[in-house]
Image 1: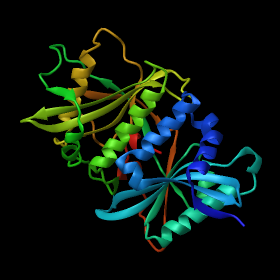
Image 2: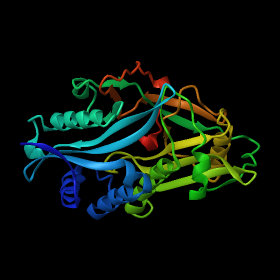
Image 3: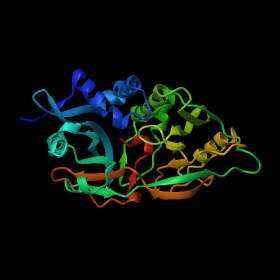
Image 4: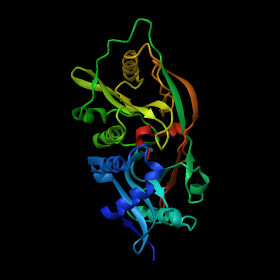
Length: 324
């Protein structure tokens, strides 16, 4: 009889071996394991991330990541289940095990007081719509940093540190649905990107975390990644503004920071520069030169008797660093 369990070390090793060909991001098998372990060992990962499996005796039928997400919905705190990395072994596909796994996760979350469930689908919307999920439209925008003729602004930009995180967590964009950005969650996004870069071939990926400081206090930050695109890490070289925040609601400091960083290679062309930006938020130093629907389809469904309003792209703040 199938049952839902939280994966122990032996089961996790089996899952990683099975999922490596799909989600290895160009890493070696050992690198893929190290990257997974780094995420799980981070403070936020220890408290909010686990791997679940649907098993029948000793046989693995399906697996997924369980994210315990603290969010705000219409200004009120709510607990959201994040479902990631849904996987069924080749020999067990076509028998409904993934749907069974997700149904059990939803039921368990509902019984534990979660308000909603969120996932990012790489296979389109219909499969998950049949389970009650609805699409939140999301666009990936291509950015260009406007470089001033008089040179970059006199903005202090330095490498970010753990001591900055409590200050950075104070800055956020308001929206009907948003993640509550705690210091540990911001660090998790940094650890996830840095861990990927550290486990990849030397020089193939770069991650930069910078803050702008005024009066010995950080007032803005940017998290930028650069490397190959695609799950297998074999796509073109691209850059992402993974996340950012600014004490100034206009984002003027973030824009100035990007100008300073762009000035480091003023004579060179940047690779395509992407982001998921909040609706109607665009620092004057940045312009959008392209837009297309995000590859990963963001979807949501309520749990229990909780009510969810219809959510458009403008109603949700979800940075690329927060995707799972």
